[in-house]
Image 1 (tube, one colour):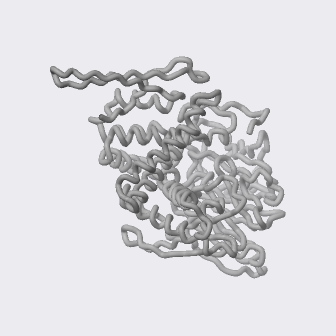
Image 2: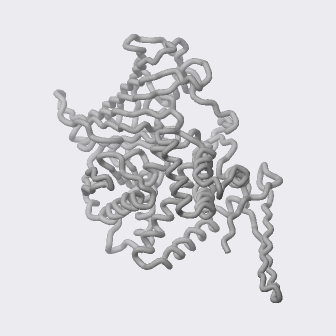
Image 3: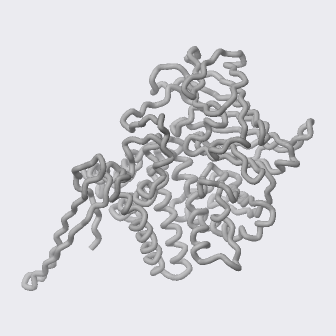
Length: 501
């Protein structure tokens, strides 16, 4: 994924956005050949951001017009951005109309066609291929989305959130309006339109609210969705019991596509999966197939809080959501195995996770592509969805859980959500919540010591020697660590490594 014109982006250069978008109202007239997008954005100047014009990201869009508070306004198109140089300092509503061509979108980013249906993929920077926007994770807004389409071609119309209205239109088309009440970054936007059938189940959350769970698949695949539904229910119950986190929407949907190229995506309330991680035929599915379905369904659901309700400020913080959620889905799977086969099964799951780490992440850390869990620069963010960000990031979280104990880790998670619900934050914010909730176990000097796991690449090795003094009846362990050089980091500072005895 190397672009010869790519510019290196540095974490140290991060600046808050000049503007914020609080509310988004989207209307899409869906058609594979030509889709019209009408967006209304509630925009305001960011008091914490730098001065400057409003520059909205856009890629492969055909603009039809821009209005500010109902009046046409001039704009410039430059370097992949729609630029407005004269906007008021007060809050205003910006209306933008543009067209896109899903059928010719071979990038499979933004809105595209798969098997005659329409899907979106917006992580990391796909929303700019749908409409002009501040397409960065630290701009969080609530969304109301109206989809209009030919019911013969697209009988099912889905988007994030709760279904507010649906029905027929005078011109023979139909519509569905979806409202997502929780602020989210644009990379979590999703829509699906096509011919699908669904398995559904109603549950009651811990607080007594009723929620509708739906798994949408192509006709003929419905009987293969039972295990995925059971996995989703188990994940919802586990997050309630283990972390006190509830499903927050009236409905939760999964859509399976045979061509979805991201494996699975945690879009708020509307997860889109590659079908192999949803469908299981009892006649041919293996234990490994079932384990993958359970783990990945759980992973995307658990993102509802660790990634969606609290998201990453910038893409350098990717492990904030991915490493933490991998740790959570590993713990979920271990608990499910223990409930089925006894406490020893947690050890089997742990062995399996460590095998994955050693097979995929250790070689990455030992090679020319070694990078920290939180990188300092990138040219293409798609290249950083790596074993280091995911699996090693999960191990960093697991070390915190080891240091703090289960009760201390839960206190840290509770404080993290209390402080940052609805915000885009950093790995430092997560570590600060853990430390502030456990000042005795993670005082400031120890916290700074631990933070090196986010900044340094490489796999440290620990040498252990032991000595037993029979006369004094004492046993002594001496530990020494070393970490080999990695690209850009010739010398390493010591890591804080928990060692259980």
